[in-house]
Amino acid sequence: MTQADDGAKAGRESDAVLIAAGVADLALSGIAAALRGARGLLGRSDLAELAQDGQTEMKERGRLAMQRYTSVPEPHMELLARRVAARLNQSDT
Image (cartoon, rainbow, N blue to C red):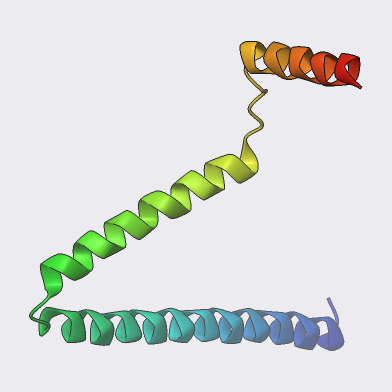
């Protein structure tokens, strides 16, 4: 292995260490921000109502996500009823 190869390898290792340190710093910043937010929440007098609102919002978000990512076929009886209604409307005209 030549000296140039050793320098390139050391540069890649140094880059990896710098990237790992950056990720760790970002994670610690996120954790610190979350702890500051939690500390602010604990001082609120309406914490129970806030938690209930959060639970309701999460349920609604979950319901919307389920509707968005699942395809539910139209119920068979509703499909038949719409077809009959469409035929009746066509025969009236």
